Image (cartoon, rainbow, N blue to C red):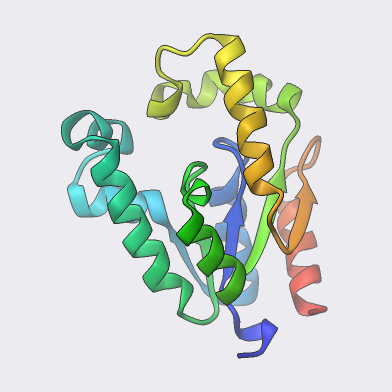
Length: 172
């Protein structure tokens, strides 16, 4: 499979803008956009936070994994995966082998500016102190270091980021 035909996986910490940017990239490239969390929410007819509460994180992670593994084999999709999905080694390996993985990199300071907008919808942040959130942020950065392309998102809007991604993809 040519790089140009591979699906694109967007990774990055929660709240970085994977869904917003992914939709813009998909529209510009005339590709299908899939947000893994949204697909699971549709299936369970519940928001992610309630899936965690009602069924547990393990059930959510298993469904997330099976969905990502099946979609990673498809061509020309733009796929946004949840901030924690890439922690699973099998998901990481399949994505890096079968797709083009783009890391949307946001600094801790910019992320903290957004925390109020996302905290209620992110089960892994519930009950965490600022220090614990910071530790989670930096622990995940180590996992996100495995990618094909890194896009720095600080102080840029979603359209600018999407345009850069499209430009990079068309040059592959």
